[in-house]
Length: 331
Picture 1: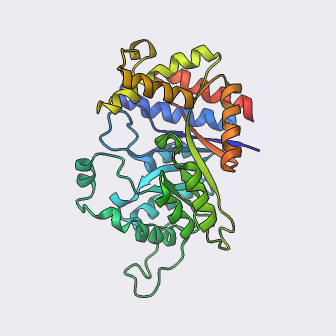
Picture 2: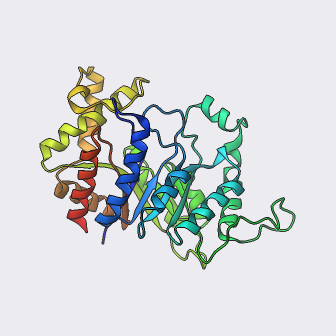
Picture 3: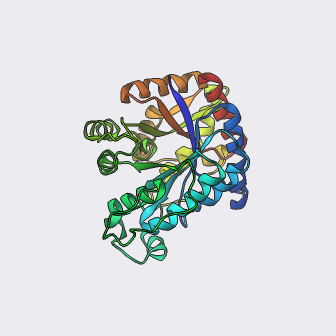
């Protein structure tokens, strides 16, 4: 049986204040809990004109205060920017606020441009230490002591409690899949970043190299996809124009807020028209029945039981309606 979850990136909309976008993410989380979604994840980006969610741990605390069932997570914390001990402390506090409901997704990518990443952490080689950081974080999150001789031996991340956050590895390449398998962690593949390229191979690597443990006896994987449903297929494709324009502009190095569909249409070059045709051919767009049919086929192909859905629309009402329609179709 297929389960759906949500990743909301707090995508900026032209003509809308960025602070309002954060509050819309908060409102969406409560709705998604009521509609039956399993998880609600939020992302981390920095100095990004399109995505204004910069502090997932703060946003998760606000969401925790107004929800009771849905799991809450980061997708993810860009770990090379930070000290693993501090991240563990933040998420142990979150687990105290929402016991047994916290997912701690971590990634190696900067979530920003190079200059911004250096301002967050001046160490240009910080990402080289990512595997070590994840192992330290894993110990501090679960309360397991670090080995004798490690600088962190005898240091613990508080508050402790009967539950702890679930650590997830995020990735869009073979690297994350192999590291997740080696460290016996659940794995989330960013299908929406690669437009699906590499997903099958990453899942194969993850499952074939997974090292079972008592805490994690078998692999657990999800994919994060971009999808959009509306009451009619024509309306869904109309709303998709905002996303299409954003993708085509990004390919030219122009990154900005989402435009309304009626303002998003522009003349595309021959090359852009080909790219746009490919984008539409592979897009999970249409009525809820059409989109869910494609999601089920994808889940069967990748042998997964859960898909995390990202939806960008300029109008937050249309975004919420898309999630509502998908929930009605699948739950």
